Length: 251
Image 1: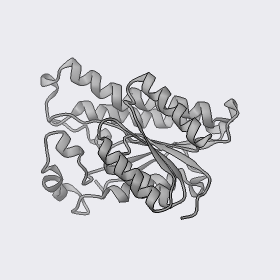
Image 2: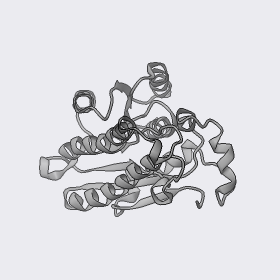
Image 3: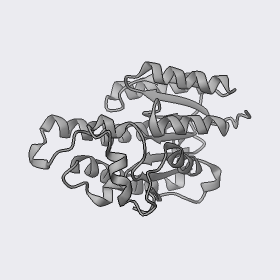
Image 4: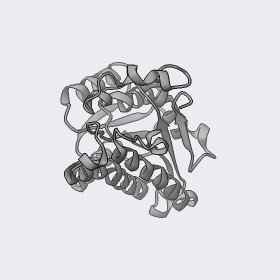
């Protein structure tokens, strides 16, 4: 494995799409910091897998919706890698299927704190390190949105859809804000992807149930989304910023 000298931080990187980004990123030569919230075993196993293959990775436990955890996370990246070239704002939550008239304020607050505020906080710290305005050498931020942002997820989780709509707007605004400072900001908008997030929202059979509604007639894989993320992170996307790339099988 040939290291490219660059380092990335992947939030929510212990499982699912985040783990695929970390794994494929390491294979492409990135040094990888893997943030996770609770599953120590999964994060540790992923780090071991990457290191065994000749890569450089470490795990950082923390809640992106808590500012103190975000500050500690970036401090750990500074200490370990001494630089940051890529941020993947992947951490996010979904909740149980519900209508708006069944949603509590605690549910709504949790959704926005993690999915929206967490992405803002991580991007803020990344810009402080990457932007030429702050003495940085540039970099790339990729936010994870969802096709729910444009479909609305009625009768399931309009709160999740709204949080991802906020990510779309944030991506566009931030990309223009830092466009002259060497920082590119893009998003990937997955559709039905076969990961554990559906089970965490109380719908373990959702992938099978929804695949027929996808024009390609199948769910996507975490690796397929990860490849889109890695392209946007890479120098191959050097003139791409403010883009939102659908990885949704045509949905």
